[in-house]
Image (cartoon, rainbow, N blue to C red; front, side):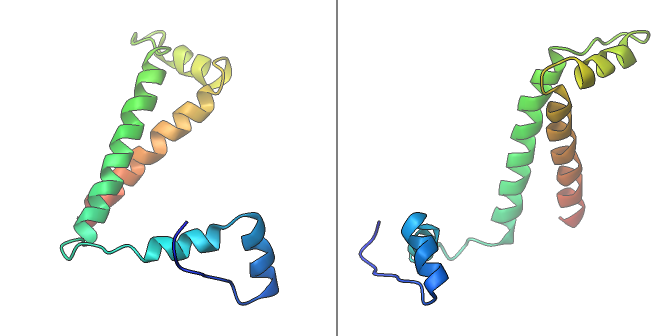
Length: 108
């Protein structure tokens, strides 16, 4: 990975690192320089971008099954939650970034 020879101190850490070198990877990633202007605004911007992209992608998937009619809207949501393969998961993945988006916007 890199020129650094990082070895964990504990036997458990060495055993784990031999099988899955996450500790070496984490040490390698901390060696990269970061720009001076990198601050919390960049972090919140990245979080908001991730939430927005997730909402758009899952919203398009849900829109394929949703019926925008006053009499059929509830039935279409039930259809998404019960009959569509992983429709409940798509809905959950769509709703939680929406809430996180609002939380982050309230912080800013």
